[in-house]
Image 1 (cartoon, rainbow, N blue to C red):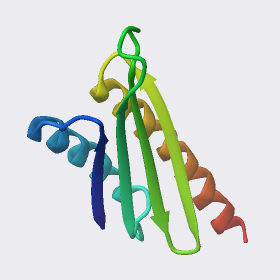
Image 2: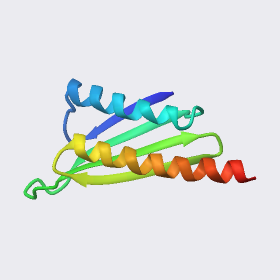
Image 3: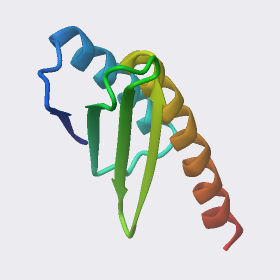
Length: 99
């Protein structure tokens, strides 16, 4: 699995990158054939409280999944985005097993 973290208009700390890597790598236990994961980090409207946006795109053979969340911190947004992707992957696997 290739992981690419892209922080837009700021530099992500190594701690944040390690946290994201740890959370995203857990998705492989739900679907082993993950080819690549792209994570986009962005600060939207710096004057608001919930201004940290995380978008996660997962590429699997013949399909892709995307989730984007905005929260107070990048860690919280990452957690919510990964949870949303877990649900999408479970639904996808259920469809595959029904065929």
